Amino acid sequence: MAQHKRNSGILFELGQPRRGRADWPDYKQYGITEEEVDDLLELATDASLHRAPAESKEVWVPLHAWRALGQVGGQRVILPIIGVFDTLCDDDWAAEELPIVLSMLGENAIEPLTDFLDDHSHAEFARMMAVSALEEIAKRDPSTRNRVVTIITDALDDPDPNSSALNGCAVNALVTLAARESIETLRDLYKRGNVDLFACGDIEDVEMELGLRTQRSTPAPDLGEVYGLTKQERPNRKKIGRNDPCPCGSGKKYKKCCLQ
Image (cartoon, rainbow, N blue to C red; front, side):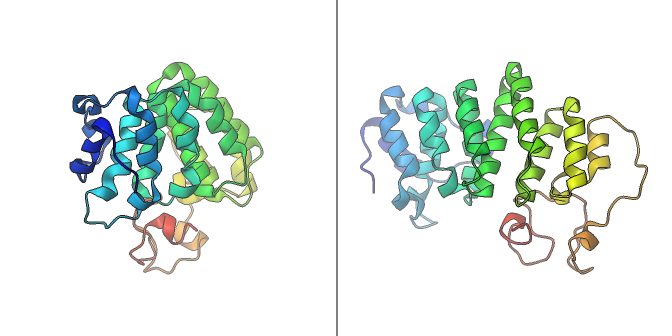
């Protein structure tokens, strides 16, 4: 296990945090500064801490470390954080928070995130984290919105046919960023059929979300039928987030079950 040094040692005492970006503490109050970035990176990526007992305080140290990196880190921590996407993409907290951390580090993260997204050798859910990070950057800094929309749209112009969940995540990001200018790319994507409909519905749903139509012209697809679910397995709503309970009733998260 990594040796905690200087003020970063306080992270071993904090325990389970509250969920939600509004509840992140100001780690500078503990005396943590940019001088401890190397220690924080070591703690954020320490495999033994990630494997610590679920009831321990130690298991939460990496989370506190990456949150602190968002506050005191600089450009040099961007690549190391992106570098753990493949390792941590199945960690719910990491999948939710590392994109936020990168958004805090600013637009310098856009280029390496784009390189990661375009590299098909990475795990699908890891590339989804890259999409989420790009979306978070654009939301935090609206001046980057057009650049981010172009990057995600370009990725969908030549979509990975084996990554419907990733494509659905990218569609959702464009909808969130109100990217009406990407509509032709989105229409072509849906025609190809390699997008997860649970992510944000069919193309008519997307067009309504973007304000390009006010009502459907065809019946909404029965997603249970599309994905071969029995009546008992069918969800009560059209869209399911990757971290929501799977509609099949397995008790697992959607991303760990029928989405795979």
